[in-house]
Image (cartoon, rainbow, N blue to C red; front, side, top):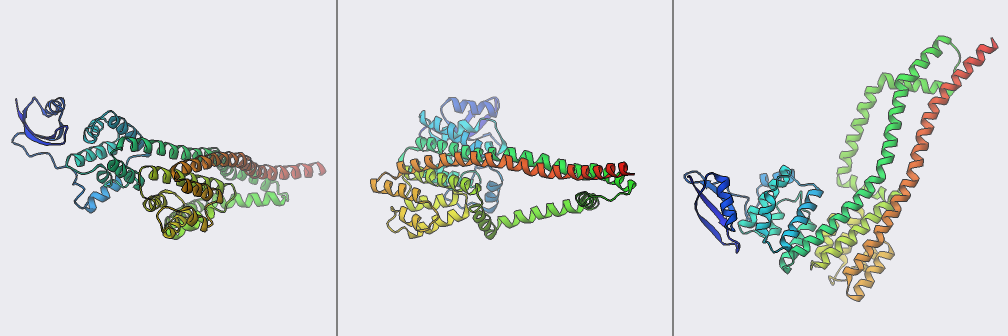
Length: 418
């Protein structure tokens, strides 16, 4: 029976090395797990050890490692599931390294498996959980890492992870509300556009050929429709290329700092859309700030984290300006009110929390208040947008139908006169 050299960690975190007899590598791993140890590396005696895991947090991350961590990332639902399961395992008394080792054995997506295995290896090498998470900025946000660090300092990591789960569930719920509000208008717009293009390319040319054979004078709407159809048939490929190029240019422009700022500023001016954007941003601001403060994160650091996660550049800029005006590290309602971006209701409720010494509870009430505003704004948006979209499509399709009918009526009336 072959022998395997192993490196493992005991339940207390002590490093263990030795050899073990087993039929194969899998059997050796099972023996180590049954003995209560967490395997770090197992290799057959006489062969090279398995490659070392990711570097500990005390060393700098190379550019290739950073680029790799940015490329591979877990989806929000995967992060939420991972956080929930890790919280449950820690609450049952399991250590972080053992819990990560348990989760790493579950086969899910490739990115999920690789990230969890790397986190486990970093923990086994002595890195803190928050430092291990920081190597994957594409998956774990600054908010996530800061709260984990606060949980490690307070010894309440399981509770912090539970709060993170609730926070991300609310964020996901708000995001789904906005997406659901856009599904029906998008379907109506897409189907209407397809109908219009089909009519202009295949239907109108047939009628125009008939009208040309009859040689009658056509009404102005019919002439406009026929000329538009001819341009679309003849230069449709160029128009399509131009539209694609325009979309690409707009997307690139909106990714720049100046473009994002302009677009986010316009979002705050568009009726109906403005209410959804602001309600979502204010609810996210209050919920994130309250979660951070409840876990012992300092006010200035919490504001910096919220600034990076609020989603709107204009509102984020106001938070940055308010953070620079905060002098005592505690009072933030007055600096926020001075910027004239945050509504008086929010700053007044925040001031009440500061006076009572219970800002976390006040921020929870603020988040609930603007969550309700978000629900109401989404309902109003969908109630108004659906009939508007239907009306626009009806006007376009109706113009095509009426233009054709006007020409037919003129032709038939001319035949009767003759």
